[in-house]
Image (cartoon, rainbow, N blue to C red; front, side):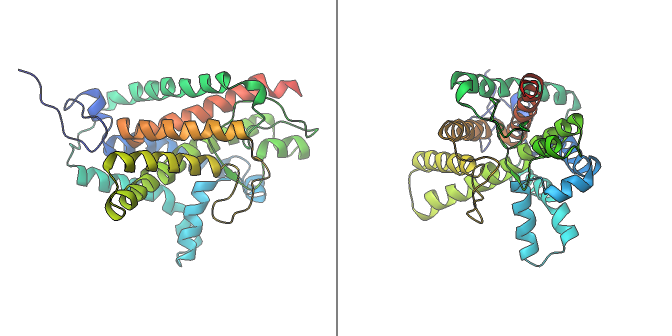
Length: 302
């Protein structure tokens, strides 16, 4: 007798209680991403807090959520802790509405991490395929004391304010190791909060607009939602979508924009197939790998 498929709201239905089905559950996303969330929050405070505050180096998507809550009248302290709480609350709500099992196997954590790392590899290969010579430095990984652009892997993360790497080179207030750690922390935050905004929230809103309001077909709604979310995801690295101000640390570059648009489509498809946990983890691991590669292979070229 063939095993029955477990009904999910994702693009593919996986066999019930299989690794692919278990790890696509929202409860798995919560537990898998919780160490990343804690590391991002604690790391932001622990690594040279004064410099971080002065240069306002924060993940843009995180700051958007903070500003939204503050504009609604919530206090600064609550606005700071609300984004990570929002991730947990939204995923708990999805877990409840999905009707999936709450059972969690801790032995799945390590395979999930390995899967995320392997899924990040195609993005690394894509940057090389698109031509590393056409890839200027991104707004996270920059080591240019002479304002000279160097080739590096573009990170899929956008920050507000200054650039810690260039700050350390120009002021000497932060060591190279601290700069690397700060960039890793930022990449982890981007993996969580950019996926929250551009995949978990934005795609759902776009699907409601196209499918329920405009009455487009399900297929067309999916395609439009993925393409628009990917384009906005890429654009927000070069411009603040809320204020309309360009990002001086990451000026527009057609190849970088194209790469991040493709990455946005990749993350959207991955989100539809594997769920939020694997997608956010893949995004975070890509930024971590890109940051380390840039520090090891490109920082010494100056």
